[in-house]
Length: 175
Image: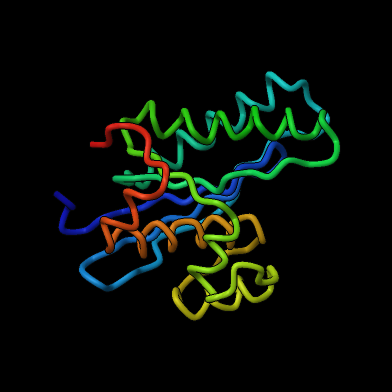
């Protein structure tokens, strides 16, 4: 059963900048709560960068107590090293909410763009414009935070339609 107010954490995985955005869904109303970016030192050792992302994302979850999380699936880069490192950051984005007993959904970038803008191949500017229209009080200061809010919006939209949500990858048990 869905809580009366469902708080959703959207995550845009990244090794240097991991965007996050939180929205609340109450009935058919979607409200902006907060957004930001967890940073890691681009010059630091990989293990310490991953630790920074873990600690930062755990802090967001502690501060805003979301009920569910959603993450953008990553695409494969041409550079295998970059892909591996991004995959490790994505692992942090998956495990931190799971450690907090949140259900975690994953969505492809094209589905997020289509849900938010109506066009699965929309440009970043179009996504940002629609996020601002859908969440007028949002103050996402970076593209990473905007992307994370788009992930949260997508989850909220699909959450309203349980059949659509079941067709997506949903992992974890949730609270």
